[in-house]
Structure formats: structure tokens, C-alpha cells
Length: 177
Image (cartoon, rainbow, N blue to C red; front, top):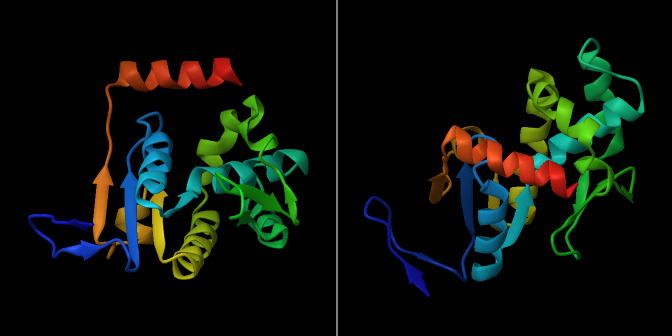
């Protein structure tokens, strides 16, 4: 199957391809990325799970925003990575699944400021680029995937939604958890 973009050359789905989906929280990036990856037979990288894992690690070890270097060091020691044999891939820290923990309310409440720690973002960008090299047929979602992590990605999407829709989606997610 071939796809054509007006500004970019044709790409083949049997060749390496990274597709990025950027946008603010609550726009449906994860849902769209997961569906697109499944439809195209590509791997799916949920970068939000990585930042949520960092937030959970900080909370569970009593390390907050006031100690960013300690948090980044502990997150690096946790060796965050995914179990790609699961659908969707399972987030692992210290070799164990933390998927159940990363969607908890206390993690959701602190993930945005945790994700804003510059040294943590640098660490995560390095890890995401490694994942991109290990999984060259990838759909990746996150706020800066096309602009910072994979700026040369052949296909880049930016999703947006009204403030009301984003709030509705977040409310539904929190109610479900």
C-alpha cells in the first residue's frame, strides 16, 4: 500500500517509517496513535506512559519536583522500557510492569509538572530515539514527538480539540479509572 503527501515523497509500508502525533493533553493522541498503528501494522509508542512512569516512581519513592536531579537519577536506574510482546506494550520499571500504577489519580495529578523537568525530558528523548532505532516502523504520540524527538519523521500529525472537548475527555478518563 502506498500513501502520498503533497509535500513529501511516497512511502511504502514495508519500509522503515516513523509517524508522529503531537498535540496537547486530551486531544485523543493515544487513541488515534493506537488505532493508526494497529491499522498499518506498526509498533505504537505511548510516550505519555513513560512520563507517567517517572511520576509514579517519584511518588512511590518520595521524590518530588523539589529534587529533580534525584528523580532523573532514579528514573534512569529504573531502566524504563516496554514489553513489546503485549498489545498495547506494557511499561516496565526495574523489569516489572507498572501499567496499573501509571493511570492512578495521584500520578495523573503530578505528571504534567514532572514532564516539564528539563533533565527528565532530555533523558526521555534519548530513550525514545533509541526505541525509534529499535522499532523503525513506529507510530509515536506525545507533545513534542514531531518537533523535538523525531523532527525528520516522514509523516507528522498535530491533533487539537476545543477546551470543552479536552475537559470532557479527561473527565471520562478519570471517571473510568
